[in-house]
Image (cartoon, helix red, strand yellow):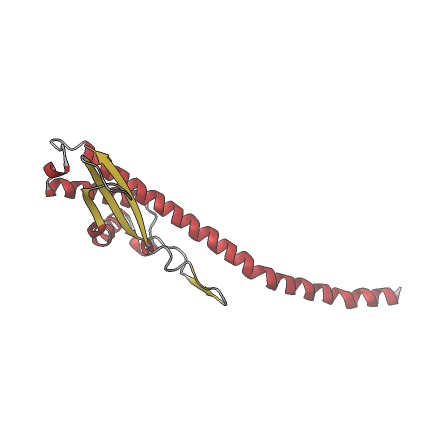
Length: 174
């Protein structure tokens, strides 16, 4: 039936146009959800690694010989604890593409993170009690950021500025 074939042909392009319009409306939402999933996955992994590095530093502190309080902790021993934190980060982190292999990651961490590691008295988020030694790591999130921040109309920047520094803290009771 020629009339029926002509009707089918005229509706087919409309269906294609409708599908293209629907795809154009759904694609940005899908890409935004994918961006958020990847960004927060990397963020949570990096926070876990930074917290683990602080815990490794506190564990290294506990096994140091001759340390019974913060006052008996020497600068050399503090440097040893900080180096343990750096080693833990270098082994665990999948950093940005330009950070290379282990030796390059280690050098980058020593220049960017080592000055941000504190070994002092106190607690994590509270006033410390006597005998507590805190190991705190402040890690610049840009070292592991995979996706750049994006700007959305009427929303602003997404994925930038909110998590510039990740902090991990652990306490050792001496």
